[in-house]
Image (cartoon, rainbow over all chains, first blue to last red; front, side, top):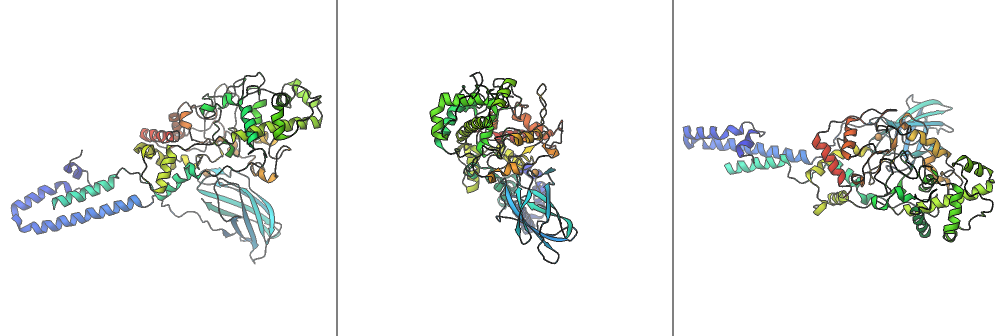
Amino acid sequence: MLGKQAFFRHSVFPQAGGMRSVRQNVIRRRGTGLASLWRYLLAGLGLAALLVGVLAVVYLTVPHSAQPVGPDVSRTKKTDNGLYVASFVPERGVVRQGELESWVLTLKTKTGASVERAAIAISGGMPQHNHGLPTSPQATDYLGEGRYRIEGLKFTMSGWWQLRFAISSGAGSDTVLFNVVL
Amino acid sequence: MRRLFCFLALTVAVLLGGCGKPDFSDAEKKTIASLALNTLPALKPDTTNRFADVPAAAALGSTLFFDVGMSRDGTVSCSTCHKIDRQFQDDLPQAVGVGRTNRRTMPLAGVARDPWFFWDGRRDSLWAQALTPLENPLEQAGNRTAYAHYMKARFGERYERIFGPLPDFSGIPLNASPLGSDTEKAAWNAMSDAQRDAINSVYANIGKAIAAFERSIEPTPTRFDRFALDLATGAEPKGDAAFSREEILGLKLFIGKANCVTCHNGPRFTDNGFHNTGVPPVAGLPADRGRVDAVAQVEADPFNCFGAYRDGEASACGELRFMVKDAPELVRAYKTPSLRGATTRPPYMHAGQFSSLDEVVAHYAKAAPSVEGVSEVHPLELSDRERAALVAFLKTLSE
Ligand SMILES: [Cu+2]
């Protein structure tokens, strides 16, 4: 067991170890006259200790995963050259890890017209893991009003996923990247 | 005054040192909860096998699973390698049937939940998987018409009660298969299309019966699951549900710094994916390139989900339909195995390369490059204490 002295020597208050001798000296030389000053000093130290305690509690209870701002996860975006406005949402509203899922990609022109008969190629992966998609999702169906069903998506891990769409239609070819964070 | 000071100092000491109770961040708690067995959903029906949940089919499947008659020389059954008292595996670096194979036998707990089968995913359903060792010359080494004849002779009545009438066997050769010896291949090719289809149907039903049985093999709760349940409900873990400091450190590393949970996720501790993790090849074994060579095999399998022997709708074939067919990362990629029960079933990896979990952890920490393709693993600084803690945590998945 560490004695109190030893604890102080390793404590966050480097001055604490020498405290007793200072105090004894003070008491011996000045008698009880300065006892109140000493009391203030001690109270201050106590408060400091309390503050450290509170900070420690906060540090130990706050989730440690607070990360810097993640990637842009907006579900609606202008394509890279501004030809289309694309939005990409899970068909059933929720994302479930590890299951084959369908999402819907909606394509509108700048003026808001639905984009029909677009050719869509999909690629992607996890930039932080250096791997691609575990499946080969495809646009399998045109649902009308510029909406395309993207089938065969599977998010097998939690983390940051990227999905890139290469889109071409009568309005031209453009690309867009969506981030999905699980 | 002095006593108050001591009290405050001790309070700080206790707060800084932690008071012995496991403390996890909310994010850690969420991850731990996602690994617990109580989050495993109910087994989904397999619409590609309409006998999957027929008890009589499962009962016949269980008979076939343990029947050494289901092999060329009458000595090997599924259970030869998938030993019922050994987590349905055989403790060998490479499985030994009629001959020695080049891969480690996989345990079967929860196997019906896999989207892909074998270490490289060369089959896409449990019933198609069950058919493969039957004709592999190194495993059960039989042939298709011989199995059909055997079903009629040995289990004819049981078979017909489940699957309907057996075909007419007149003119069906005793030994014929598209995958067998030259004589067996020639005999298979001499059969009519209708005969081949009839035999393939019987053969597929054998697989469907075995798969129906295997669906009952599920993972069981472990110490980790009891710990996780108590953590989730805020109950004080009692008895063996309490984790030691070392086990807690191991769990924290597993879901944190060591990144194990990236691939070993969910209640089965697998992402059901394929990864190149730089596991070295075994000298003397045939070249093994993992997933990249399995793609063509599953596409060519007449019993795959697109084939004529699937029951139900083709909408069940999503995994095959959206399979990654060519990507550099398929080279030497192997399935992420479940870690449940792993401690008590060395050796590890697809050809039993590592004889202990210490070696496995050392391999992942070192992250040696792959002999072919690129390993997805990155080097990691782990102290001896941390390595031991990871192994200690893994043990809680076997207790
Ligand atoms: Cu990843």
